[in-house]
Amino acid sequence: MQERLSTIRLFVPDQLASGAQITPDAGQSHYLISVMRQRVGGRILLFNGRDGGWLAEITEVGRKQVQLVCLEQLAAQTSPPDIWLIFVPVKRARLDFIAQKATELGAAKIWPVQSERGQITRLKDSRLEANIIEAAEQTERLDIPELGPFITLDRLLEQLEPDRWLIFCDEAEAGSDSPSPVQQLAKISGEKAALLIGPEGGFTEAERKKIKSRSKLLPITLGGRILRADTAALAALTLWQATCGDWNI
Image 1 (cartoon, rainbow, N blue to C red):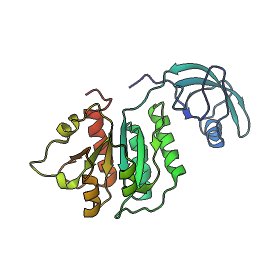
Image 2 (cartoon, rainbow, N blue to C red):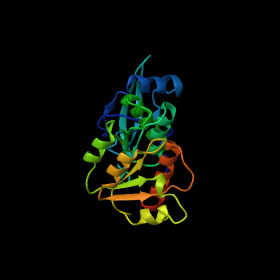
Image 3 (spheres, one colour):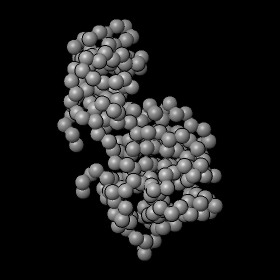
């Protein structure tokens, strides 16, 4: 883990450079003034996913607005391993949990998809994005995972890059003679990949047939127990990071 740069970290869309004037949005200003009790001279770590981590100083505090100025870059921009999490959304609270934890675990892209057994038919992107940004701020990431559009599984399979491995976390692979997921994942170490987590109840046979028709497909098991979708997502990301990612295990 990198050295802690600042207690307070904020994601901003603005370009960051020495002397740049930054005006946080209303929610961030409220957080700085009313929650963190910041005053003129207070220092914040800013990042935008492009320009690294910048130390900024509060130059003005109004009733509802804060002004910042960038002082110096403290960390160069970093990029996460090229792993995506594709999943069928579950209940709202657990959906928020998946977005937060996938961000903490280093997913480069978080992509919810619709399936026949999915519990959710519409998503509020702004809520997911807020959870992603908050998790990135808390975990010292200098980037924000991309949020994929909520589309059907069929469209997802059509749009997924042909050279990206699709790691299918398949309940049907469980069994005493199933290959170890670590051994399976090690086969594609160094290549870009996407983890696919199904809904509770699993994909239908028709959906499974479409998934299995993909050429760059790697089915893996997550053990003999049936996992909830949110648990499966975290287990799969943990396995991938330990085997192919940036944990250096």
